[in-house]
Image (cartoon, rainbow, N blue to C red; front, side):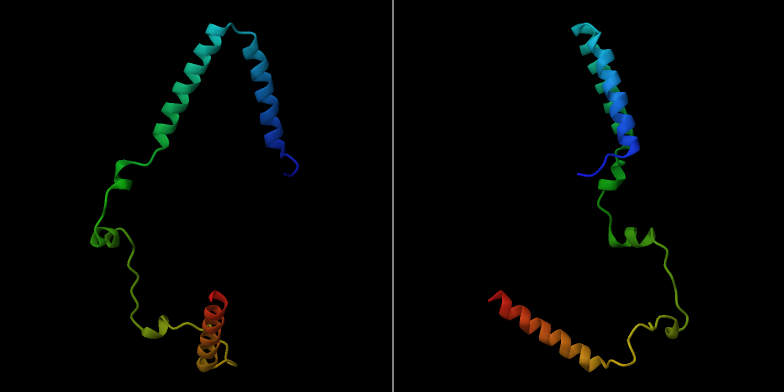
Length: 108
């Protein structure tokens, strides 16, 4: 656990001050305060809950319809330039094969 941030220190000080103020209330007033805070939090959290649409099952077509569909007129636009020139694809395939063999041996 690290050093508390300034905002958490301010929050802790405010909370301590609030608790001290609440101690001055009667038990009935404290319960009423708890009810009010609970009602406020319940209302506040309900407003932030996802809408019912979030839980509705959607078809692939509906999901696809909500996303922007990029189009490419030239296949060269889709080509990546990420493969190192000094490595062949055969070297990569050999590496993957070797790693899989090592994984199988270590799993045994």
